[in-house]
Length: 104
Figure 1 (tube, helix red, strand yellow):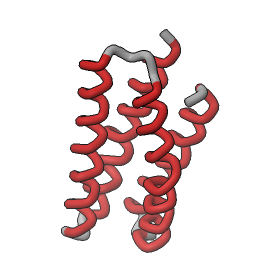
Figure 2 (cartoon, one colour):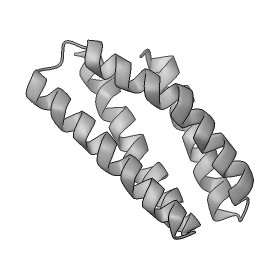
Figure 3 (spheres, one colour):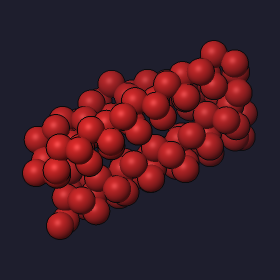
Figure 4 (tube, helix red, strand yellow):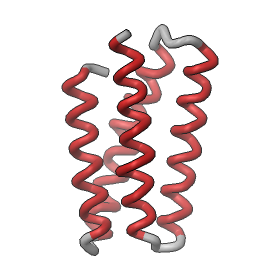
């Protein structure tokens, strides 16, 4: 994952989170599904291919799995602001961690 890709994904996720907050949950849900089907899968592949120490790699993957589960649970509850928070604060933080580790 390049810095540009990480920045681009972060921007897309923040826009999606804002749409959830503004009440455009259908549009945001479609975008989130697109991100999950492509961008998040790419993120997982990058993590798995990286030279990051296995313990850290497993921790990052577990954080990502927990965050995606939290997003899914919030969606089932129709907690759009909760989804936005998980996307904005947790998912974006994980992308930042991965991007930082790849630079080292």
